[in-house]
Amino acid sequence: MSKWDKLNRKIVKCERCPRLREHCSRIAEEKRRAYLDWDYWGRPVPNFGDPQGKVLIVGLAPGAHGANRTGRMFTGDRSGDWLYRALCRAGYASQAESVCLDDGLELTGCSIAAVCHCAPPDNKPTREEVEQCREWFDKTVDLVQPHVFLALGQLAWRAVVDLARKREWYAGKVPKFGHGAIVELSEGRHLLGSYHPSQQNTFTGRLTEEMLDDVFTQVRRWQSQS
Image 1: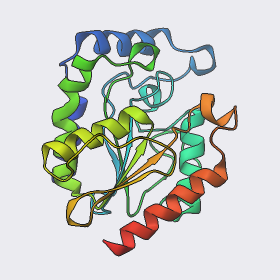
Image 2: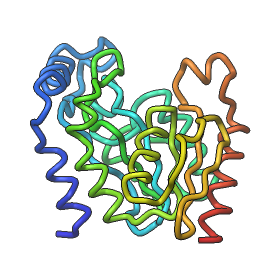
Image 3: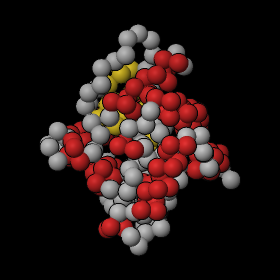
Image 4: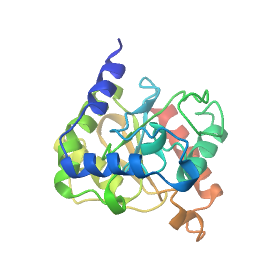
């Protein structure tokens, strides 16, 4: 078994946060009407993608009826629809649709992780819950050794900045998050920011597909220069 698979198995078995485990299990039992015939995943959601790709996309947490249902990051909800279409256009994903674990989707050149691997109530993990999950993020970074981090949203941005400061890849004040923001880290690493492809952002036009494509153009650029 690869180190990537071993890490993912440990993530899936994690029971550190009782509030999150109870919430995920309850959602998996109650279900949403549209998914009554689904056998929900209901566990911590593992990393997904190509650990040798040197690009790490960082999200906040699984969606209650998305990844918590399907068992794969950004799979089965509107956020994932936007993200995987963009990844496909950028050449990172084998297909533009991501609906379930056995749909044939593969990532090449990048992988996806999360600040919190369990779906939290109201999509808001506590500071303590994020800290409990930090070991998995640290070990993911150790394994992938990313040249480019793409943070989807402000909380993911802060998690990468905190890690970079802890590892002395970055010194100084916390850089301001923004769509298209770029921070140069040590040894050729870069952190890029993007608005999260949530319905709140995509329905209002705060994030467009063109804006997301522009970010992945920058990801490609910095990946090729690393």
